[in-house]
Length: 234
Length: 234
DNA sequence: CGAACATTTGACGGGCTTCAAAAGTCGTGG
DNA sequence: CCACGACTTTTGAAGCCCGTCAAATGTTCG
Image 1 (cartoon, rainbow over the protein chains, first blue to last red):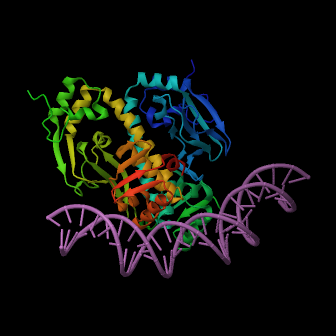
Image 2: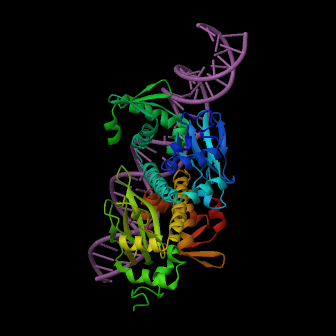
Image 3: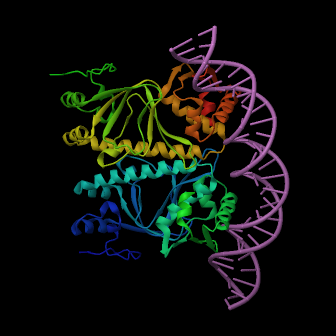
C-alpha cells in the first residue's frame, strides 16, 4: 500500500495536509486523499486554465505561485487573486456543473497537486466537516474581495500601492529584524494589473515610496520594507 | 397558535418564504421561522448597523432597499452591495462571534424581518440542507464582487456606468416593450460611491448616455433604458 | 410657496495614461 | 565568464479626463 505522497515536489509526505481544508483529517483519510492526487508542473507563464474551461478539478499549490485574473470590458487584464504555497482553487465551482470565469497563470515554475471532481466530492461525503471549512474559506474570500474593492477606489496611489505591498509581504515576506524582505512574485505590469494602473505609474510610485525611505529596491525583484508602520499609515 | 406572519408590511402570510434560504422549507418549518421573526422599519437614510457592531441578527429585506458600504482609506464612501426585497444579510457572520465590517443604510423607507443568532442557528440545525444554500449564496456573492472589481477597473466611464445600470435594471427595472423603466434607488452621489467617481462625473456621463439615445431620464429618479443592446455593448 | 437639498453646468488644475526612448536586468550560448 | 539579445523597468514629455470648487438650476416636501 502506498503510504506517502509520490509527488517529487512534495517535501512533506502528506502534501494534502498543507491545505486548510484537509488539515484536520486523520491519517487514514489523508492517505485516501493523497493516493488520489495527480501532480502537474507548470513553467513560468504557462496557463493553467482559461475562462470557460470546465471546472472539474481541485488545485492545490504545492510550490510556486500563480495569478488568477480576468479582463475588463475595455480589454485590460485584472488580477483578482495571487496564490502561493498551500493555497487552493477550484473549490466552489465543484458543486455545480460549472466553468471557470477567469484565467490562471503560473507566476514562476509551479507544482500543483490536483484532485478530480468525483474524488473531491467523495472525500467530502466521507468528511462532511470539510463543508464547514469551505464556508469559512468562502467567507475569507469575500472579505479579501471587499478589501480589494476598497483599495481600488482609493484615489491616492501610494496608499493603493501600500495595500498591495502589505498583502504581498504577508505571503512572500521574510522578517529580518525590523525590516521585511520580499521577493516579489509580481512584475510591475502584474502589480499594475492588480491595482488598475499602468506599469509606468506603478514604477513612478515605487520610486516615490523609495525616496520617502519607506521601501528599498534591490534589483527589480527584491524589495525591503524599511518602515512597515509608515506603509500601514498611508 | 399563530399561523400567519403578523408583520404589517408582509403581503404574504409567510414572509420568510420570500428568501431563497427558506424557500424549500415545509409549512411546519416555515411557521417556526415566521414565529421567531422580529419586524423593524427604517426611514430613508436611517442606519441599520455600523462597522464594528456585533453581527448577531439575520436581516431579510421585506420592503424597500438599502445600501451596504464602507469607506476607503482616503475617506470616500464605497458601496459594496445594493439590497432589495427578498435579499438578506448577516448570514456569514452568524457562524462566528463576528462583527460587521461595513455599514448599512436604508435607501428608502424599508421594512425588515430579523432573526436573532440563536434562532437562526436553531433553524439551521433542524434544516441542515440550508447550509448548502448558504454556500450557493456565498458563491453568488463572490461572483458579484469579482464582477464589481472588473467594473471598477474599467477606465471608460460610460462602460462603467453601463454596468451599474444593467445591474440595477435587473432588480429595479420594469420591462415595457423593448424599453426598461427603472425607478432609481440610488442618488447620483450613491452611484458615484458605487463606481468610485464623483457625483459631477456621474451626472455628466448620464447626460452623455442620454445624448447617445441609449437612456432617457424622466425627472431625476426615473430612467428609461432605450437601447439595452447598446448598453450591453459598451 | 419657500427652504433645504439634489443635480447640472462651467472653468481650471493635476495626475494618470499614452507614446517614445533610454537604461537596466536576465537568461542563453559561445 | 563574458557577450549578446530579448525583455522589463525607468524616465521624459504631452494630452486628456476626472476631481475640485463654484454657481445656477431643478426637485422635493413640509
